Structures are given as structure tokens and as C-alpha cells.
Image 1 (spheres, helix red, strand yellow):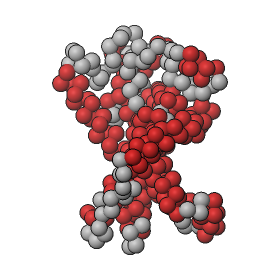
Image 2 (cartoon, helix red, strand yellow):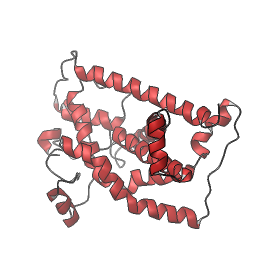
Image 3 (cartoon, helix red, strand yellow):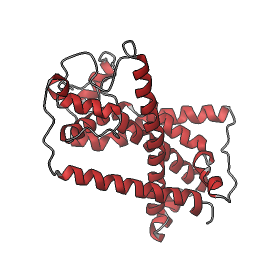
Image 4 (cartoon, one colour):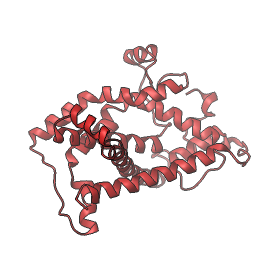
Length: 279
């Protein structure tokens, strides 16, 4: 992103972000807050995938028959779902806590090739477009494939097996979230945070900027990285004025999206802890 797109006129990050060397305690506090956001959102994203998977392939007989015919091995079907849970749960967490102000490495030949092919690349000076946002997740799966196999080989070499929590109490059922096929979910998280994130970083960056430009209030419950982007975009540090607070369709859209996401996560929790455990 260019300075005109972000409003940056200084190397120092906008509030509430700080450099570790100048404010170490505040830096630690900010990163603890981001870690909490990441953990919570990774779980919510995983539960949303559980709900969507169940609604897509388990509620409709024709869809169930097609899916079972396409992937006849039941263990493989479950492994695919578990890996995707981790992958997209990790992507959701990164989207919300994405830090635009982290230092980036120099542009390389690989970056040049990706940019020439219109593959999302965070070092591209041009803003991300809708087609790149849509193509980002499928490309991330392609980028993540080597990582899937590496993680699969490492876990296999270590003879890691999934743990199983006893069914019964609500707490015992809840443990399924962490114990059921956790190794496959770990593969998905690893791909999201390491192998598959390369084309997604520009998507995270562009989506965050889009929302920051249209947000009219710095809500304290938002992650500090987004609040920093909001302050930066509206140049509040240099005496700029906050955008006028008025009714916006985006406010309604975001409210509905949050309600929908939480509803799907709640349904995913029910599916994972009760339906999958036989009531």
C-alpha cells in the first residue's frame, strides 16, 4: 500500500501499536491482546466450518450420497474436514488481527513473478481487487499442499494419534474440540499460519483497509491492529478529524455478519459435541 492509501507519514506505527524498544510493556500488552483474539477467532472459524460442512453434506440426502461417492473413505472425509477447519479457522484469525505495520522483506524475483501473474502479493503497490480476494483462498490451498504433506510426514514419523474425550458431561463433550483429530486440525493451522498464508496476506491487507476506510468509530473491542489502521487511514495522529457518524449499510452488514458467524459457530459446537457424539 502506498502512503496515500494509508496516510502514513512516519515510520512509527499508529496508536495503539508501539515499538518494543520504546514501550516494551505496552508492546507485550498489545500482543497478549492479539493472541487472545487469534485463539478465540481460530476456534470460532473452526466451528463455523463444522456447521457449514454439516449443513452442506449431512442434512441433504443427495448431497450426502454425492460426497460419500466422491470420497468413499470415511476416515479421509473426516480428515479433509478437520484440515479445512484448521486452515480456515487460522485464516479468520489472521484476517482480524492482521498487522499492516510489520516490517517486510525486500521484493524478490518470486514476488515479481506473482505480481506479473496477478497473484495476490503483499508487496504489490496496487490495491487488491475483488478477483484477487476471491482467488486468494483457492490459491492458498495450492500453496499449502507441500506443507500438508510435510506436516503429515512429521506427525506420522512421531506416531502422533488423535485423542478421544469421553462422552457424558458438557465439559467432557466440549473437550472434543481440542482432542478429536487434533493432529489434522494442527495441519490446517500450520498451513494457515505458515505455508498457505503467502497469497492471503495481500487479501488480509486489502480487506482490512477496505473496512478501515468505511468505519466511522474506533471501537475499543476491535483488535489493536485494526484500530491502528483506522487511526492511520483517517490520519487522526496528525490532527485529522474523525469521519462523521451516520447510518451506513456497512454497519448493518457487519452486525448481520457477526450474528451469522456466532450463530454458525454455536451450531458447529452443537454438531461437534452432541450430534457427532450421538446425542
